[in-house]
Structure formats: structure tokens, C-alpha cells
Image: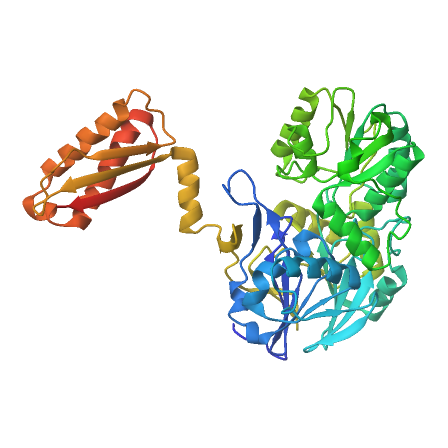
Length: 551
């Protein structure tokens, strides 16, 4: 399959289906593709040296002449964070509402692409055309400003692509969910709903930011000495709630972390947060009495370079937390971040700081994603013929499909990354599977996550490295003892190095005269000898390197 025909409507996820994060969705129709979102996820302990992971766009990169445009539903990293890295491979126009466009432009400026990427700002609720697709942005509520669903219209009907959402009756910042438009789409007859699955196992509703604001204000008033609160920098309603809780307690708010400062600037540029409480700079915060300051910090997920981590390790240039101070985590732990968050909270506790997290006693966080009751309500409004869960691990997607069937949706399709689905005509059908890999941001470059460089890095991390230099004459006879270098392996007494030298000498002696004149044959034999000796002594399979010097 190369080009979608005029007589079909296709859907393909290359990221965000079968996982939470790095969303990349494609719709195909009438010879063109439409991309919805282009995001990242964050690296974990299995990815040494990698902080950011993103979908491999090779499928659509090979067809980029047919890519009509890239729609950004909102400004979260898992929906727009890969644009700066991957846009040069795609070179398609980008469409976003003002806040997402403002955040994206800041990223593009840092990447040197500010004047290169064509961005069209779409007003909230705006209708526009991209290639053969008639599109409508639909205002939702979520944990960021201007979250949008997308109505994708073709001759086959309307696909309702939810983006990230919940139903918050009092979001505090931004507009309410556009319930009237959602019901209108249902009344018109929706072909399909491509929907967020993150909280499908959570009963009830996600909850409102208004409740969190009231609880934070009560909590901060009970604290003595310094208070530091960390949350997602993009959750500007929460950031405003924390700042207002500070003022209500007679404290001065301090924004600590570049991401926070950038988000507030982008919001104010778009007309939000214009009455944000006056803040004190990080440099001046130290002059305030401990009971008069509240730090709003980045780093709720234990990111090592974020503000809260630097404070916890005593490495922050201007800010400190001491015994008797309080650190409040107004956030949830993203799956996979349990260990870094645990390390951060332990480091704070070791300094005598009281750590408070969201829980039954302190209700100081609500999710930005719909729980089951909200999903049911959305299905009642939109009433799609087809349910296609995304934005979840496979277990979330399967459970979401079961819930959709309970809501009387006639067809459900579970389509993890790389699954090509024909939505119309006829019943929704899986028609093909395409490669859907991952890329990693490595320094200033982008490399395959499963490529040679990272495979070797992982091997080095877990097994160490052994290198040997063989000095031989033209006939392959040794002219000096092999030189051995070991990294990441215990050998204080030098016994392992001695055993390797002996093994390499024995290896050369066992080769025939013809083999000793063949550098490739010697290298292969030396690699095997290195690995054999290390495995016998340590039970490890190291990364090996062999250098041959002929004199």
C-alpha cells in the first residue's frame, strides 16, 4: 500500500497506541495523509544516555510528498515535542491553536528552525481545510491550555479524534468542554471516535482543578518555614493555584525552572494569566524569611536537571530546603518514573524536609484524562459507529474497547502502533502492518533506539568492555605481549588481565600460518578469546574491541 485511494479512509498510529506518550497518528484519504500530533516520551533506565524518545516516522517520511499537513492538538510534549527533531524529515505545514503555536515557536527558535517551519494558527473552534480533509478544532478541557479535539470530515463521514481530554466543570483557566459541538457531531452521525484510553481503569470522574485549588490553599496555610511545590510545568491552572495559595498564606511565589517560566510567558503572550500574582526571582528568594516564601518548582517526575532535584541535592545556585521545610508534589507519577521520583523524595527526606504527595489525606492533584464515567458520557454524546482506542498501553486499549461495546458501539478495533486500519468503506478492518520503531535524541542528533550505538551502550552498561592490542610481525608472530584494557569490570589484582593475555597468546599459537597472515581471522579469534576468558572469570559478556598492529 503506497497511496490511499479516493475510495477509502485509513488510520495508522506510529506512536501512542500500545504506549502512553509520543503520539503520532495518520489519516489517509484521496492520495494524501494527515498527521495528528508529533510527540515524544522520556527515556528510562534501559536507555543509557537517552532523555527523549520519539516515533520513527520512516513510513510517512517515505511518502512526505503526500503529507498534507501536521495538526497539533495541544502543547504537551507527548503531542508536539518531536516537531523540532522530525520536521526536517517531513517538511509539511503545521496547524495549531495560539497557545500550542506559541510553545512550539519557542522550541523551534532553540532548534534554529523558527523561520523555517510554516505554522498556521487556528482559532479556538476554527474550521479549516488541509488537502482532502475538512477539519474542525473542538475545545476540550485537560491539564493544559487550549486542548483540542479534532473533527476529521471526508465523504465517508466524521472521525472524532479526541486528543487528550477530560470533562472538568470548573477548569479555572481556559474554556469549558464544547459539549454542544460534541452532541452535534453525534447528531450528524459519527463514523468513528479515536479516543484517549489513559484512565480507562479508573472508576468515576477525574475531578476538577477547582477542588485542587481549595485543597492547596488549605494545606499551604498549615505549613511553617519554606514550602516548595512541584507540578507539571504545563498545567498552568495548577501553577496559578499554587501561586494564589502562596499569596493567601502571606507568602511570595517564586518560579523556579526554565520550563515553568517559558510556559507562563507563552500563556501571557496569548492573553492568559494576566493577573498572575507578582513573583520574586530565584536570586532574591534567599533574602526572604523562611515563612514568607513558596517555591514553585519543575521536577515532579524526578528529572535530574530540574529545579526540585537540584534543591534536593544541594546543587541549586540560589535556593535551599532545610530541616523543617515542606516539599509538596501536586502531581501523579507517570508510569516508569517511580524510581527517579522515589530517589528525589528520599533525598528531600534525608535533608529533614517533609514530603507530601497526593493521596486520600491530601487531595492535591487531579488527572487530565477521562475516567470511566467521562468516557461513557462521551460515547453517549458522540455515538460513533467505530471505537478506536489510542493513547494507552495495550491493556488500556483492550479494556477501552470492552467499555465501548458496553456503550453499544457496533464496532471496536484495537490497533497498536503500525496497524493500518481501513475505517471506510464497509466494516472497520485491519488491512496491513507497517514498521513502527522508535528514535532517540542522542546529544544533538537522532538515532534508532534499537540501533548499534545504543545496543553497544547498553552492553557496556551491563557487562563492561574489554579491549586488546596485538603487536605482530608480517607473519603473524607476536613481537610484544598483548596489551589489555578493561572498563567496568572488577580486576584490582590484575588476574583477569593476565588471564586474557595468556588466552590471546594461546589463540595466536593455535592459528595456522595462513590464518596468522589474515587480520580478519585474527580479529575474530581474538574477540572470541576475550569473551571466553571474561565469561569464565566473571560470567559476563563484555563489549570487545581488538586492534592489530603489524610491524
